[in-house]
Every structure is written in structure tokens, then in C-alpha cells.
Amino acid sequence: MSTASNETEKPKIILYTSHTCPWAHRAHIALHALGLEFEEVIIDLDRPRDEWYLKVNPRGLVPTLSYNGAIIPESAIVATFLADAHPSLLLPPSTAPSGALTRARISFFADAYISKVQSVTRKLQDLTLSSASAAEISAQTTAVVDVLAKEIEPLLDGSKEGYPVADPFFLGSPHITLAEVLTGSFVLRLLDFPKPGVGILPEGLATAIAQRTPAYNAWAERVVKEKSVNYIWNAEEVAKRTKAKAGAKKAAGK
Image: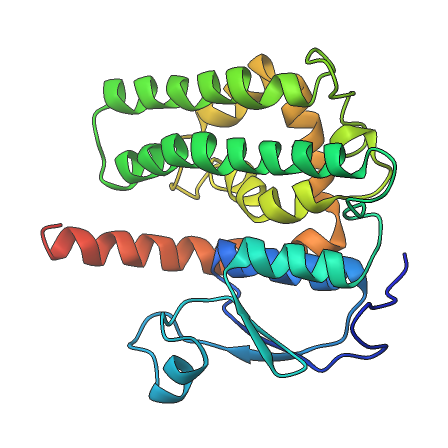
């Protein structure tokens, strides 16, 4: 995969990040997939941000990318910038044949996953961690699978015009694309959190997803096996932090 840059052959890259943040994880996937060397600065998200970091990013969020001294915040912007600055199979240039259309379809898929799937999944996670009733959890589990079946499955199974079967990856690409870069960290959580003993998402969710959205399930299994997607993933650590945050929120009466 080409790593030639429009900006410089070997850019100076610093990534301000947290390995437990799904948004920051997007930048890691992009950088690894592009084969780019970078300096990593870990930001502790469990305490107020240091003044020095607020000077880098006044919002105090991660990820933030420093690229030859230029500061670029926000995960989707960071990932897309890297894909544009280092042309590769992640994302075609808009001037390439069908390039603009492919970019639009990738953007649509990523938006559907984050705006539709993540909202209902987060609600299910909150219900599970708050020990809600079995009926509430069951209803929200169905809601998650309903959204996957309506919004995502047709973009992967070949049933929607213009969207070929995602085998092995989005739009039939032989390599991961920006679609996988932008969704991979969330796909990991949706696959790992329902596993027995984790307790963040109900165990029945995995079976329901496999039964009702087989194309999504197969695609997701391929995505999470990619080293670019999983190389910083520590399911145990992320689960522990997620439960701790939920416990603190409950103790605070929020």
C-alpha cells in the first residue's frame, strides 16, 4: 500500500490519544493502515486536562493530530485527512473514475453506523450496566438489531443498488477502506461486549445479530481480525473502564 505523501515524504506526526477511546482509535487504524510512523502522546481521560494539552486542543478531546506542526482535531477529520494526504486503497481521490461516488458511499455508510447504530447501542449499554429489567433490555436488544437490519445490512449484502457485497470489505474492496477505519473501533465493541462474562451488552445480542444480519456479522468478523483495527485493542481494560464510569455515574445519581 502506498504511503507517498502529498505534503512531504516523511511527515512529523504526533498523535495525542487514548487507547480506550473509540474515537481516538480511528486515528490509530488510519495510521497503521497507511504504514505511517508517528509519536504517541497518551492523554489521561479520567482527570482534568493539563494546561499544556488545552493549548494544543482547547476542547481537550482526543484524538488530536499534529502533522508537520499543523494541528488537526476530531477523529473523522483526522482519518480523512490522513487518507487524502497519503493516497492509498483506503480512499480514492475525488478526481479518480467513480472516486467522488465511492467517497460519498463511504461517508454515507460511516454516518449511518455512527448516527443510527451507535445511538441505540449506547442506550442498550446503559440499560445493561444499570441492571434494567429483562423486558427493557430485550426490547432495546431488538431495537439495535432492527437498526442494523434496516440501515446497515443492505449496504453490505448487495441488496442496495450501487453497494456490492462487502466481501471481504466495504464495496467489495480487497483491503479495508475509510469505512472500516471510521467504524472499526465501534464494531469491536459490538462484537466483544456481549461475550459471556463481560456484562456490558447482553449475551443474546450476538446471536440475534448473527441470525438477522448475516452479511454484517461476516463483515464485522473480518474487520476485527485486521491488525490495523485490533492492534491497540484491550477488551479487558476497556470493559473495566466502561464499568467504572457507569458505577461513578450511578453513584453521582446521574
